[in-house]
Amino acid sequence: MHKIIKFLLPLLAFFIVVGFLFKGLYLDPHEVPSPLIGKPAPVFRSPVLGDPSSTFDSEQMKGKVWLLNVWASWCGACREEHPTLMKMAKMGEINMIGLDYKDTDVDAQAVLQSAGNPYQKIATDVLGKVGIDYGVYGVPETYLIDKTGVIRYKQIGPITQDVLVTKILPMVRALQQ
Image 1 (tube, rainbow, N blue to C red):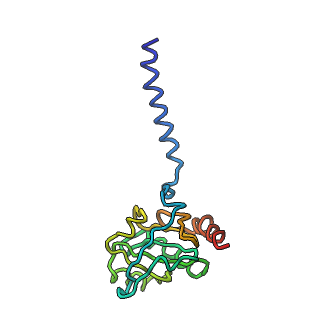
Image 2: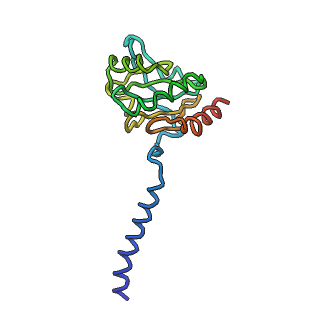
Image 3: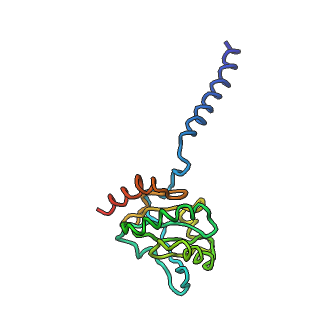
């Protein structure tokens, strides 16, 4: 009996580990759970891109549903999502604020000049302090924030047309009511 238990325990442990690994194959890596979902968005005040004497204060967005899109000129995935952001801006359904993350004004402005600017305002985060407060893993990341300043959704990675249509827009419309 003792030999059977010595054999079955490692086998059972092996199958449990395999089960967890198998389940992980079906998880979406863009849906990393964020401890900030359902909690107040960190308040910040940052210089505005291209006008360091002017600041963006996130408190200005109270009473509005808005997206905070963290991006950078050096980010390839950010350029991938840029056409979708431009479509969102043309739709006019959501207030979109950019957070230029660990970037230079010159490089960021060059990207926006060539690809277009979908943002109502762009705050800069040269040192990454705002990104730390938001728990940014990498760029792009986007946060949907409700009228009371609570984070309702976090998108890790580029916003695709599918994510826009199936997740973001329905949530925005529900939150705006």
